Length: 196
Image 1 (tube, rainbow, N blue to C red):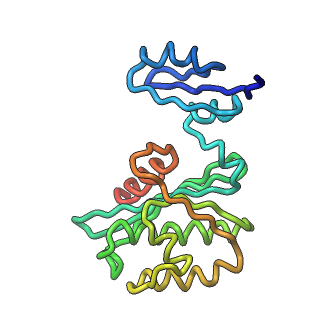
Image 2: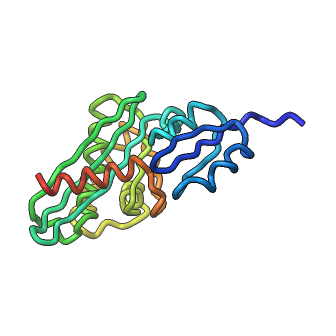
């Protein structure tokens, strides 16, 4: 029986390990504190996982993560974003003072962030982009599946109608509590922007 080689990445707070057999990995996993582990078909993918990188970015193409944040005291909102292109990462964050969109709280930031990163990708000649997001409206308004009622959603829809001719967007909803490294980075950047 010819089985394909697999690599098992195992890590906790203090250890980062790669095994070439599940039996070896299973010997170590119970000894670790709150371990995370996953199997991969290549050693490079396993190493990327251990280093908090998204190896699939090379497979998917240019990839962005975007998130929004909100300060209830000042009614300011913000976005944080990470764009991964050709093995490089670009970080973005921006704060918006209280305005007509503040009532949408962190959603306003995430919408602004998605638009910002899409425009950045267009300006830099990218023809496609994978966007990972938290709020479903980022995808549904862009694709026209949801009717835009708020001013910010209408502006995003208008932006989308122009952008669609220049770039192909693939949307991916981030699953809650999956500890995705880049999604957490986008969240952190959004929070940092509010402190600026």
